[in-house]
Image (tube, rainbow, N blue to C red; front, side, top):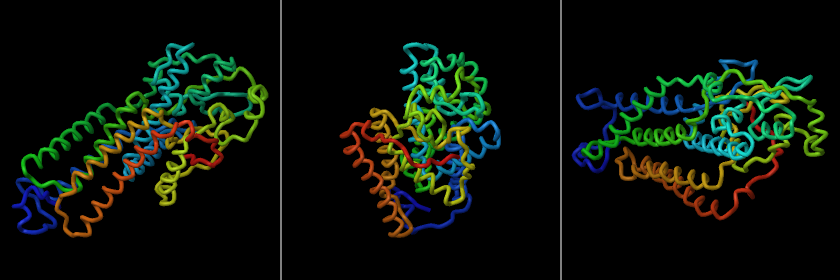
Length: 367
């Protein structure tokens, strides 16, 4: 069990292995409390998108499992996902504000997660983003839907009790772990790692605070004109091959960071941890792994979050490790992650985020 060097009397006996139950705590106490906290941090935080109408409740559970696995692989990935979706929802409010004052961030989340489907003639309904909804309403292809926050809240299946229990467990674990070095007691690397998960969980909860959870059924919006009329009116760009829905041309651009995001998701797919649905065109739902481009100010905020995340691991620099190799691995990882973050602080602000966008021609993963 790793011990802090600030407690020399605990190190005088050398490295200790498994410690049984005692009046203080044993190894099992540390492992169980840390694992439970990590599970609650991820499971109660993730907000998945609306599933295809044919898939139902089981698809929601499976998507939550997929998101849980990704959050376990790297909690910072979940934060990146939440920030990107939050920026898109905020942008939709600015876009709608001129004509539709009732549109809120919650509406933006609801649309971007596939909560609104467009129904056209001779075609199954398909999800539309907030940008696509605005485009259709602006050009009078649809009637602007009267979707109130009450309607969205009714579809929200957020479990307040589960989040309350998770929050209490997280708060207790955080205070308990932070107080140990102050009192001169030992702290383990597992507890330090759990603190990093907790920090990312709080960040994700903040940015996803307005996103509905576990919505099962989308709201159907009928289209007043045939799909071909929309395509013909907007020329060649609209007639090109689409990867998700026929309205891809409305917001076809995608942040280059999504390529890296796709890579990490592919790791889970190759490990057979996630299930990939057979691709259907037009897509019947938006993948919960859709990584949207954050606004430039939020890129800086992401880097600040990453700095704090890496600092948590650096705080364990002087912990006692059973072997020199383990200490070297821990320090190498912490230093490498911190170096990447600080390099990004120099490179990313130096360029306009608009230049980091391009026309996406690659096949995205549909989960």
